[in-house]
Length: 86
Image (cartoon, rainbow, N blue to C red; front, side, top):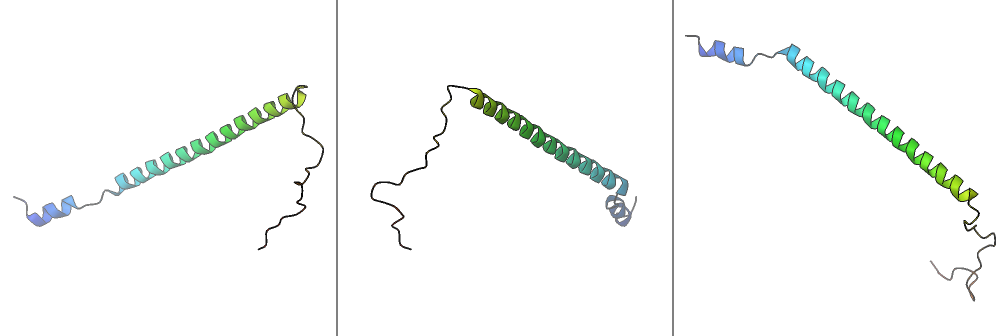
């Protein structure tokens, strides 16, 4: 019957190849997820920009689209500046 000391040493031995392998897999997964997030953000940005540009072109070419007025904004009657005192 083996002694308690020899069993204790066998149970507490560190399997470095398994630890290193697990760390490599974790790093690979994190890098893959990071790359996927970056690619998704780039794709989403490109899609949003394309949608914005097509909407801008449509509104600029639409003759029924109301144009902004070129007259300056007039102050309210009786007020020419801000009456607040700070």
